[in-house]
Every structure is written in C-alpha cells, then in structure tokens.
Length: 328
Image (cartoon, rainbow, N blue to C red):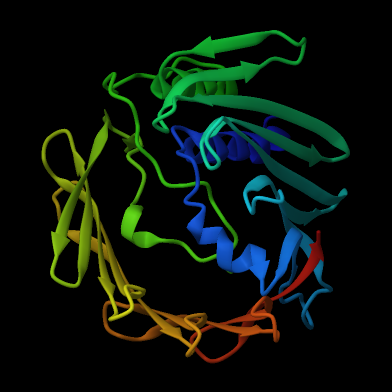
C-alpha cells in the first residue's frame, strides 16, 4: 500500500511547493503566442513524443492552455503518463485563473491535482485568493467531503499539506513572512519576461535542519542577478541573467550551492532569436562548456510555434513536441 501511494505523495509535495505563493502571470509573456497575426488563439495544445525501447513513442497530449478574448490565460492543464505492470498511470494538474476588475488582475486561482494509480483515482484541490497588488491573501484546501480548510499564510498551508501527505508531523523552521514566487508555470514555447521574474522564495529543507530562504535582486549593466539566500546568509542558488540589445535574455548562468556555500552544479543557457525576435534555439551547457541539451523551434507563417526538438549531448533526439491551435 505504501508503494502505491509514493507517486501521489510526490505529486502533492511537488505541486504544492510550486503552487505556493504564485503571483499573476506576466500577460506580455503570452501575447506573442496568443495573437498569431490578427487571429487570437483560444486553445493551444502540446503533443509530446519521447524515446521508447526501440523508437520514439507516439505523440500524446501533455499540455493544454486556454485563453479568453482578452488574450488572458484562464486555464492550464498538464498531463503526465507512466507505464507500470498494471497499465498506464496518468496524472493531471489543472490551474484555473479568475480575474478581478483590472484587465490583468488575478483575483483567484484554483489548482486541481488528479492522479490515477492502478485504476484508482486520487484528487486534491487547492485555491489561492489574491490581493489587488498580487499577493496571496488566503490559501484554501478543499476536502473530499466538500469542506474547506483555510490558512492565512502559505507556510501554514504547505506544512499542513506535508503533514497530511506523510501522515506525521513536520518540524517547522519557517518564518512567518510571505513567500514571493515565480509567475505561473508555462510550456516551454511560451516566452517569459525574465527581467521581472526570478527563482521562488521557498522553504529549502535538507535532511538535517529545515530552513527558510529569501530572494535578493541585484541589477547589473546588461542584466540582473537573483540570489536565493538562507537565514544564515549563505547563498543557496544564484541566477545571472544577461540581456541582448533588444532586452531579450541572451545568457542565463545558474548555480546551486551546498551548505558550505560552494557551487555544486552550474549550467549556462544560451538563447538565439530570429529577425522577428522569436527564440529559435536554446542550448544548455555545463560549467566546462560541454553541451547538455539543445532545443530547436520552428514557426508557421503566422508566427505560431508548430514544432520543437530536444537533443542531447550526442545529437540524439530526447523529445519531440508538436503544437495545435483553436482560434476565436
């Protein structure tokens, strides 16, 4: 019984951590996707094919984004599949977004997690109410019997979720400050305005001592630096973002540090754009400058992304993605 619940536990922990304290998305990030010329996108779907034992697997639906007529994201569904001896297990995470009086002012977001394991369906729902300035006002957990549990801080909600999932108490080393976080997760082909975003301030817990982290921002001549720092002043991670002459992200240098402050992993991401400003290539290198993965994108005549390829160190295809659209 415990083994069958492990994937669900992992889904709850990961999704709740990512969802905590999220701000409204930066709407400009979606506009290039959602306005192909004079046509507005209503639904955008991503189909993914990954390597199987002998060849690439068939394409399956992995993400669906829905927009309203104001080009605002109103729903995001993400699907994952895994094969077991009992068949195919499926997980879905759905984010529903509701806006207030302001055109792009997010007032409420509801996240639904559905996991089908060995033909058993597990469901979890959590809601976030936002203040007019984009901060989380309340966190709501929806129980199977229809009741709602409410917390005023994201830390309380996260710890309660961990306790509920593990069936045991969780030691708390978190402070009572609100968590600032990234904009809502998006598919790889939706542009992100990295000038106004950074890694989430989230509880980073090692096996020995739980600790809270804060985010520090520093502007530089051609970009900015974002650091995640522990309560003892040690750097947990750092992201250095460099911009080109068009203020697009050209290079991102990311490092993660151990408890002694030493960088344990480093990655360098380079972005290449076409004349229209669309990203056509992205390469991720290790600290020695060796290629880890490469992404290549192609677009149709309207400027909408239609296909992406991910290749590894030796040029082997790791993933293929195709995109389809419905229009208003």
